[in-house]
Length: 146
Image (tube, rainbow, N blue to C red):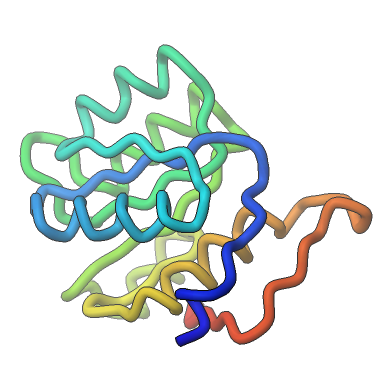
């Protein structure tokens, strides 16, 4: 399999994973870490905002439906006040595509997703605004968004 033989060259910066499901959060964290990314993972929006207050992140991967008073959308809106350049990949097993366009959100990936799909989306988001000299091409990655 492709991912067993090739590692991405991560862009500098840490990825924050937010998901209330322990198993899903661990899987996302492990998948990203195996590719060389530095990853921090938390279960709720409040914990995420405290981390974002303390240090910069390059990307957040968050579930829309988080436990506690802050959902993923609200968490990211507040996070972007603190770090306007922060990129986000939303995940959801239930949110319809029309929701994303109506509220002007960034990229998303529907659950369940494959590891390749997750990595493709993460890689593309991190490289999206990179200078041409900084872009690293990884073949066979795919991303289903917007």
